Length: 427
Image (cartoon, rainbow, N blue to C red; front, side):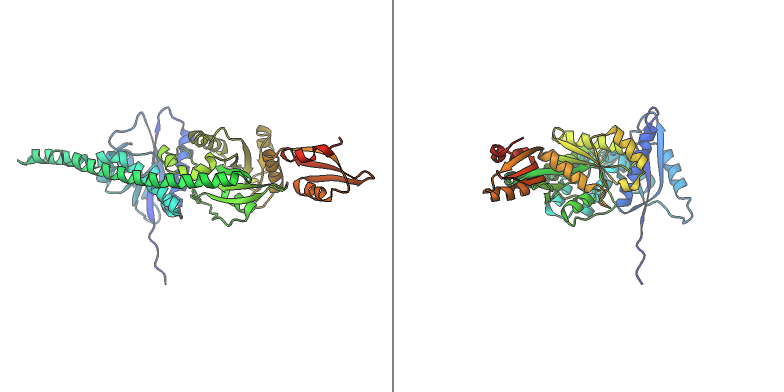
């Protein structure tokens, strides 16, 4: 008989200014709940304090935290909270003050994301990037971690108190230097990996276009990637299921090939140091020839999520890259929703990566975007049988008639492939 796995129970706490957007805060807290669930943490309740400004010592009021704990622990199972999770980044002193006051460990939003990253990092590259993100998160908090030593020593009243003054400062400086050395070594290693990516990209560029698949986390990128390439990438209904960039060859259906790369999902309020740490993974999006921006149409907040993705693309300098907006999961919404969204985004594609609906139409549109085609009529001499075969390979033949002078063909072909055929054009 297997033992029952103990769950970690948490309450989720947030702050909203008196003049703040309560709907946006509710959405953010709901997303924090999903993050906590993905990290294997069970939520006992969500509580948001509306107040004029942030409390400098404990971020939100101690009384509000106390009342929230008491309310959350009045559940049928009698479960107690093991952890406090804040929907904001806390300073080291704030986290320590809360932990000391309530005798409970504290996590903030970034720490929850880092916990998920830890669980999903499979390759050496991803593990290095996660470690780099952790170090950059810890670095500004080092000083406040040891400041209490100086205060305790100086306030102890002991005759030798003055001799101990500055111990915390010395310890924090030693820790800071240690973290900086590790950051330097990891960044040096990641730069080598990025150079390797650049070299591989240059080799691929000689052969075909590079496509980056981007979108809000859990938009269905890996599902679409698998359907297009049969790659067998892990698909989970969880946030940040994909951390490693995976590239595969993609048949566009017009005789052309491309290389498509699945990338890490984006999220709202993604801390800058996390974006910077995952630069090696995001390199595929940053240097793509074309981007597919996948959006979950069944998510009522998809417009905000689209804006969040655009923000990250701008941060990494990829907002200038041509892109196609693709709404996924149309199998989960009504035709009315699809029609209404299409009116607002007439150039977008609407698909279901899970069922395959409209994926062929999307692929045809993608091929046209990467390799614009033109329709023309050719008259190919009967002696040029090899050329006739090439035309069938390069483009789409709409009509073929045999005449005394040769084979008349109406074809749709990429403009880049027209040059050797120009002499046979008769339209």
